[in-house]
Image (tube, rainbow, N blue to C red; front, top):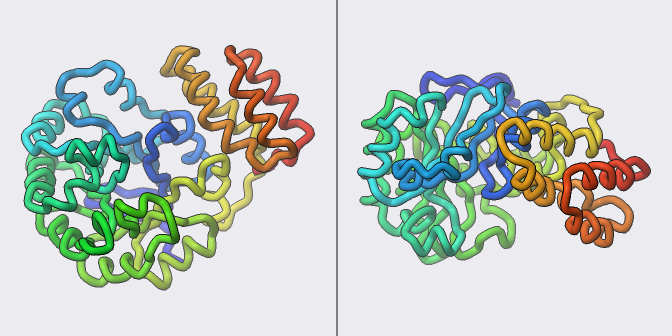
Length: 320
């Protein structure tokens, strides 16, 4: 299995297994934890190019990265080529190594604004955006997209070729339609078709839950790399597993690692909110998980939350 190293343009990752960007979960704490567990790279949450252009402080804080996040990848969304060009050339992203453009998000708020997967309905505009970014930086650019908007508009092959022709150094395919959101299983055959039709790396995303899934996509579907998203929530050890390594860190220590990292960049109120988001996934398989989750989500200070988490997890099966 091709595990050693991955190149995108002139940027190299230590392996070809990556943490997918996930809104609400891919904060700097969780990303740093997944990198610690063996992810070849991590990415910021999806960030609005327009908000960066307008110097929105809340948005700029989303650019925070931990010291172990190398290479550093930022994911942007929007639908205006000139906005992308101005942001990329402004220097605000100077510390990042790779720029990822999101053209696959299915969320109504994003889609209905003409962003994310809505761009698959307008390949000409999507091409202008990619060309604007590529023309504004010497950093590698990649594009994440889906199989199409719905089953009647499966344009992933044409879209992948357009991305390559526009100058993208890699593409990421989540082989579901926007209409599917996350229902049913991803159609991995679409990965193979794209890999056979372009000469740039194709990264597979969707339904990777084990080492067997990772190996299958690399060996049988032509993926150059694999992204794990939901499969890593509450289970960062999946990166060790897929790399054939062991890790004995328990759930409590992992949650505390996330918290400690977040507190370097954010105030306690924000950190508490993020801890609530993460703990839901870390406690879901312990005894009385539903009741425990309700109790934990009502706690209003980190100090109290940490004490209760220690009590909850000490007698549970805590090894990830």
